[in-house]
Amino acid sequence: MDVAFIIETIIKIVVILLVFSALAGLGTYFERKVLAFMQRRLGPMHVGPFGLLQVAADGIKLFTKEDIIPQNVVKPIFKIAPVITAATAFMAAAAIPFWPQFTVMGYTVHPIVADINVGILYVLGVMAIGLYGPLLGGMASANKWSLISAARSAAIFISYEVITGLSLLAPLMMVGSLSLIDINNYQAGGITHWIVWSQPVAFILFWIAAFAETGRTPFHLVANDHEIIDGFGTEYSGMRWGLFFIGEYANMFFISFVIAIIFLGGFGDGSIAGAFQLLLKVAFFFFFFLWTRAAWPDVRPDQLMWLCWKVLMPIAVINIVITGIVMMF
Amino acid sequence: MFEAIAFYLFAALTITMFTITVMTSQALYAITAMAAGMIFISAFFFILGADFLGAIQIIVYTGAVMALYAFGMMFFDTTRDVVEKRTNPQIVFVLGVLAAVMVVAIFVAPIVSNNIQALYPIQEGVGNSQAVGMVLFTKYLVPFELAAVMLLVAMIGGIVLAGKKMDKSLTLMKEEEIGLMDDTFEPKAGGH
Image (cartoon, rainbow over all chains, first blue to last red; front, side):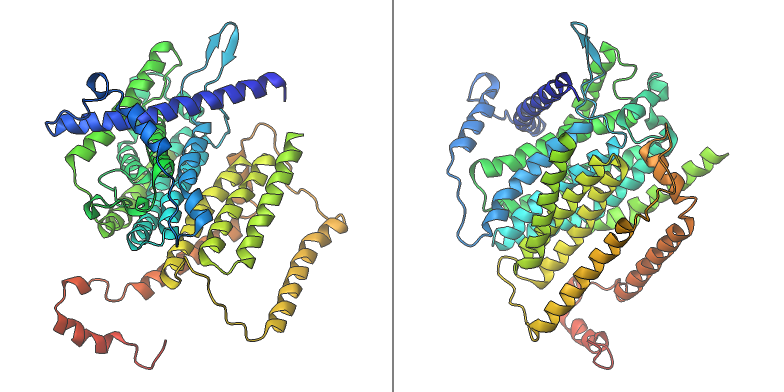
């Protein structure tokens, strides 16, 4: 383990942290603007040109606001819950290849922090821990709305995880590897080799599960907007509340990367064009999250569980069986 | 060197977490510490190069402990201490120590007598998940299938136990109908 490797890894970690923290902040701006245009409003307009500095204003507000810890909460867990959401979102990013490898001044850079050979399992597993943030925050808050919100987050968790795993199994059977780089190289032959053509059902199922995983509308049950208050976040203020949002938006970006790499060819053959295509695909999936939020209402927790267990899970299992039969003969 | 640092760090963290799980009288602390301990255990798999088992450890135990949280939420006020009913602390102490000594003996005995052999040595050029799959579907096929059948039995049992009157919804019924249902809803001979 030489020094160059350690320095390179640390630089990669810092770059990913900075880029995606900034993107998470900008994500809130995109979300407001997209929602505003779809609802025939203007969105943020007053701070800076087109309201662009709204992000900075929000940041200053969150950082300088008093960090209130209410009296009856379970203090250590209340304090650590937002950190879990934000930290696990970024930890999951360690196994995602963001770009193809490129050479700078004779030095080949792999834009992935750790190329472990079970990449996709690691990403999904660590991302799933992120839901512990809302759960613990809600349970530690000593507030009934927060507690109900925590119960909903547990319900979401036990519903969607089965779908994520089962829907991914069929494409993984075809590729024969769990590494995201191998999955990407399997589709390197161009648009006709994309897994989405051979596994459309798995693609739709995984996409639906991604909405539950990131807790976005129509599965935005964790912080139920209809209750006016903010579910698990009711008792939070300042940066602790902001950390939940950084985690949520970073997760949206990372899951968009994962969908694009597994089903839509990722960065293709590794050329510059392929790299920019990957960014375009990620941008589309991120936009789709916002589009859905503008267009659809939330479902109830029992509807989500009904959907996941009684509709999506049988479809996923049938998909696996058919894939297996086709692969055998 | 990095392996040693990581090992001692995660060993200390894991032991601390499980100590909290056992010693605290607060349900939320206990479950959270257990979840953290389970996730820290995955670090040992990663240190040993068993990436597949490490990732599986994270996935399985986050889901399993999440179910524990659901029960904790239903049975306890998780923001308060649980008052335990200790009728006979001596017996609890003796049994606890005995169980701990037995577990240590079970794991230490083969190491002390140098009786551990790797029956399936690591194959070159085979990935982690492939290696697990090979052993699982050759040597351990029968235990694997038995475990699968047992899980299936547990699932069917759970559905049968919980599935009674699933088609009826209390929110959609009138008061009188619920009143009528109460007689049939209770078990016949006080089986609580």
